[in-house]
Image (cartoon, rainbow, N blue to C red):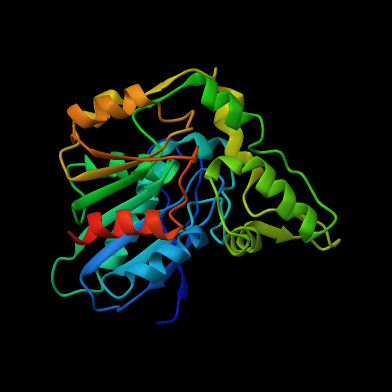
Length: 296
């Protein structure tokens, strides 16, 4: 089956957002459009929807797979005001708009699963505890993220996110991307190439940079960097949940993962040796773990 790339016009969220006009978010659409088992995939902080191509290819015979570019990333529009990247209800509003749009294409209720890497996992976690979703989330997969994110890990991320670095060639860009992404674990050269192609933006002068709005780093600049504690939200979660943890991760600690097994969703935790933050769900082993959970 062929991949389809689509765009959805999303409304301005209510509340304190400064965004006053609708904008587009992009997403890939894999599999049978009539399959009522829908899996939505959401990427990490600086990543994009094409990270899920390998996973979607494996799942498309069983599910319809929607992989979204979070606002300001990939092919989705950038926000007019930088501070709105720090307005988290906007991310939830976009996700609800996407779910509503998908459900509107069916005559009966869909079964909705959510797979999120890092930031995408947090969005799924918060969505899953919302009382009035157009479709409830049936199962949740979170790759290397939990309800407690340590200050040290946030400071490490802040060191590279939002730097609008330009490179003279695609080769230089790819090498830099690999250097700052070693914690993704062992990937093949084909996978690195795939990630680089879809992460790069070529400018008119022939230079290359990342395909995300550098202003997504606003929260690191406007707030004191300290632990993020979402245990109150986690304890409300009551759906089947799978956690993938890189054993070398500085974002999801062993102690946090253990608590996630006995609190809230009482998640299933799978440790992945030789991987840090975060497992990208590209290799066959990781894909098999996710597929078995989603299809069980």
